[in-house]
Length: 273
Image 1 (tube, rainbow, N blue to C red):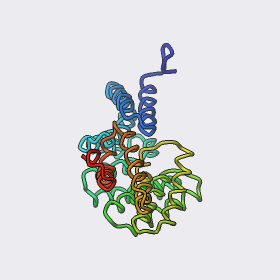
Image 2 (tube, helix red, strand yellow):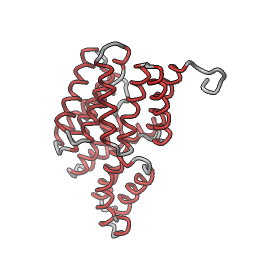
Image 3 (tube, rainbow, N blue to C red):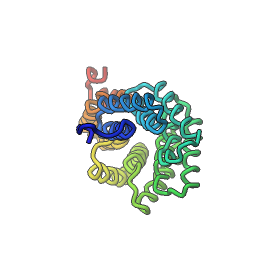
Image 4 (tube, rainbow, N blue to C red):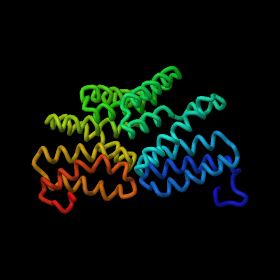
């Protein structure tokens, strides 16, 4: 329909472009995603259409995250949240602006603010009765607590999210939660438990295809390989992920310390540099 004449109305085109931007991002094409989100934003601003503006800003948040623009991520996320908080369009409640805000706070190392945003979003979803999307917030908390070294808390959130996903049939954040749990267990030398979580992550990856949050599975796979003495495999897994995310410096930030360490252990100082 995009290519037909006269094509969809501008407002519809803007919403579709924003949706397509998110789809492009989560299939690994950050460059195309940004182009579509910016086009959607231009349409929304020209029309003064809050829905189109919101959806384009909502898409731009993670795009800026993946491309390493943390300040811009926070700016567009706050702007999107302000639109929803005006309460003029109840349809926007189906989106997850507090999750996006929490992720932006993480990018600023504002961990307490991120935790509060996750909790606020979870409370709103509970009030709405939309149990299917609770794993989105629990997965976010699992990531946050893992990064903060609160591994027990991270495992609780990950296991709770996985249990809800199994119960209600949602696949939201399954890859993230299984990857986080596998990484923690690998660090704790519980290799059997790490294998079990990695199997869950692998099934989800096979089902849904490549996804940005797969870096947790990458980190866990590398840690597990290293724990078993296979330094070459650990480095190979990390290097493949590094190449695959060439347009996503925001994701490379998470991989960099681990790949440098793996390269040094594999006696490849050139790669480490």
